[in-house]
Image 1 (cartoon, rainbow, N blue to C red):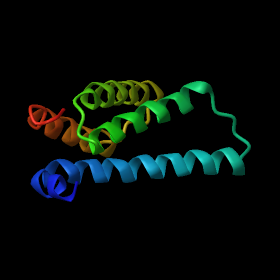
Image 2: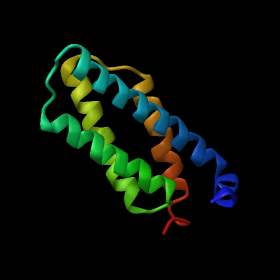
Image 3: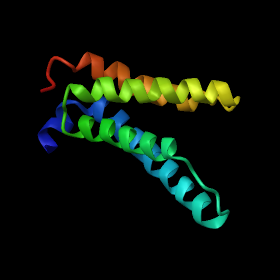
Length: 109
């Protein structure tokens, strides 16, 4: 695993940043759930599950993770435009991961 991370360090840099972003968003969601008594729908939790599956697939270097992660990010981008809360960092970081995954997709299982 360490050998693979060193070989594909540009790819795993993006995956690490995306993993941190995932954990922070999950923390914020749990914080809002327990502090403000906000109730989130099934769609929020389903997004987290699918998003986490995509990141996990990147860590184990699987080709299916490109499709899963790209689909989730397209949904996130659409929903952020629809709600009017678009942030450029929520677009650039996943785009970097998607581009790097397409570059290394031949080496993925």
